[in-house]
Image (cartoon, rainbow, N blue to C red; front, side, top):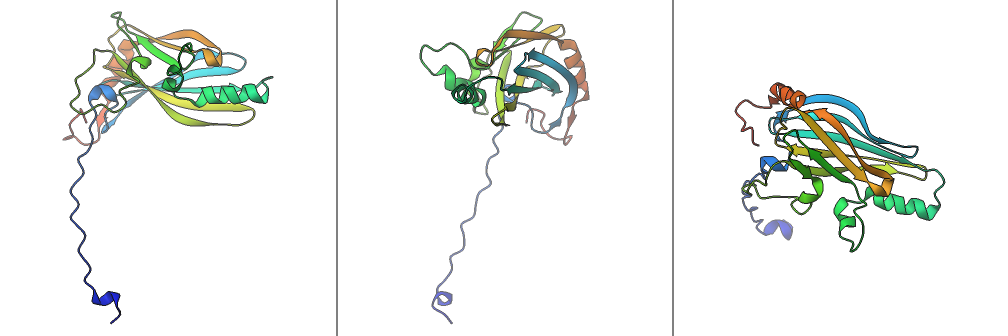
Length: 214
């Protein structure tokens, strides 16, 4: 018998079951629902160098998730100018908002509903991981989440989502964006809130017994 075989090996401690984090329904899409997908395929902005589009909307029982994509191509920018655009293109909104005396030059997103209520993604920047029992903010709420991207010496592309809570009322829904760093002034498109509400009837739970708020 070797030296180490002669020594007792302690049993590993029992690991307790980790409590699953369940965010409040206003903070994101339900985890256990198959959404109804509404294809849009509409440009929010299109210029010779920059485009932003809303591709589709995933409709859940509690709200809507907008899929956005954007692309920037290079024209006559110097290497220094292109590097500056790269930093703006891939930065999170709050990274630029934190700079003193800087204009709101980062990506801004907002929504205006048929009942006149409005929301901006900038209002929720400081609440990325709310407690499960956190009180609901005043509706509506819209949350932006970047999904990464890629870039090189000639062009850059990226994507993100906008979570809108709660389900919008019937009538016009105005989706508003602005990104002055990319040369995109305030622009908007109008969608049919009633069409999105109708689509929610086709949402399917993963498991019938699952709590819909999870």
